[in-house]
Length: 167
Image (cartoon, rainbow, N blue to C red; front, side, top):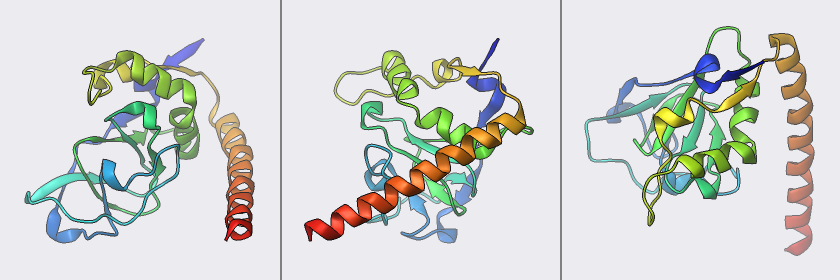
């Protein structure tokens, strides 16, 4: 038996005052890196008074052109543009497991299959919540996420070594 994404997480709808964030705590589609590469510092802040809020442990996914696979597991509280979807794990769901569910290429393919628009396709927010996710106990979610975390760390170290060799 499987769940739907809506069974394990919610979209965050909280707002934050722009005055409470800066270029280091603002996330937009521009400073999210493709291919699950994380984030960089924002070049500017929005002109509005408030923006979408997120908290440490939330999963941020760019909803514009899902094929770029822009995703980030937040390590601090901040604000983001409306083109960034903020997913928050429900009680009894591992935050890191949620990240890995959403970081799976299958999720990005599903997002593209539900996308609307051709030049700047956007994932359909309602349809995304119908994405199938495995029904796994919390203990198993933690085990899976911890194994994937170790692999991700090794990949990061190898990429840094490769960057140094190329320099």
